[in-house]
Length: 532
View 1 (cartoon, helix red, strand yellow):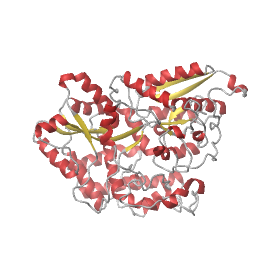
View 2 (tube, helix red, strand yellow):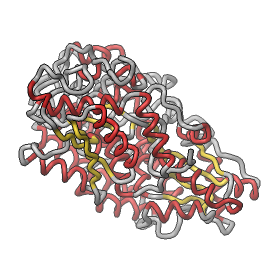
View 3 (tube, helix red, strand yellow):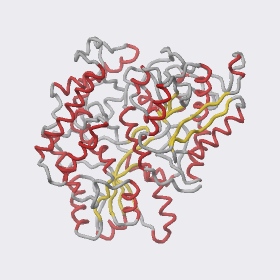
View 4 (cartoon, helix red, strand yellow):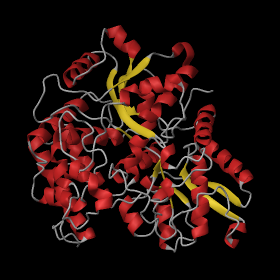
């Protein structure tokens, strides 16, 4: 088996990884199968066409829209194999070129035109908010589907074939299942062990140790830290979660709230914050209106002492980045680490295989490398109770388009069952590695095993608990058209052109615009006990 993954295409990566965290947030971990699958939702537990329905006897085409480099060869081969098993269904893998917004634009335009020509199987996290797209009737509800037997996986239910620790990510904030997680993705620090050995440096465990190492590296010819600023957001989110997760229980959907459903949200009643329990909020379902209220009432202080501390840390960290970091693209930043010009590199789990492959190609010119986790503070700080949580979340999130033709949706669901079976998923991962294409991280399909050297390097991304995003936008507001101005403000601060006070004050205006937009778009009346 080839030990390689394709080097990333940065725009496509950002699309899937970052969108994945913004729209596939950890929510309610579930209800029984009694919830309706909705119009167009798949409901059959049979492999291939149901011959009792005349529509099943038609020859049809099912389209799975994906992004270049992501399991492409293996998916096409799996589609061909499936078609041999089910000759009345031709599965086509449609690779959407262009990166960036090309994927959601392709889907949204086709759905706005009626949806007939839209793909049948999609990456839900690349398109938009899960709950919103379910409510619009664009994403099929999979509430019943996940509890159906999978005939390609020894009769286990679809959910039984997926790591149960990540079922919670399948649910929208309204409690509907809208996606199936296929793999994991996370971020952390890579470091050159040979450079560290040369300089007598040890793997850092705390921010204080990291800054000491970076300062020593700055006195050498090495770039201390290669940074793709498109991934800096993950570090910011980790600080927000670390400092504010005690506020999360205030945002839960609870009895008496207009959005409360006993079948969906009952688990919320037992969720209580504990700084030592890094999984205290597993399965939580948050009320987005309560988040807006918290922002408007300034219960989260996005200019307070905790923010001041971690933004100062990030400003200090920026002093060790490569020159021109503000505009550097992903491949150029990666090359600094591979060429041994940079000693440390902040990136994601998707690069583990790429690095293994490149080291093999480099031969004697290669180097030993490792990964280390998001650091703690040497001295406990009450502003940051407990420990920082991990940044390892579902990457590929697969869903079905809620087309008006139930037979079309049923067939698409059958192919998804095929992909989510142990044997097929194992072949997809193995084949992707063989041809040097792109795997994001560990598989979430129960029974699939990656090779030992890949798994050993993923240790740097596996931290107890997974960070939450309930308050993220009260610190780093995510409105697409604000991004250029937001980056300009952030870089001016990092480069010393603005004081911390000036930076935080301007940052607060982005949050205020975000909150106002949420109120207008969702018609919130700022009373969670009433429907807008």
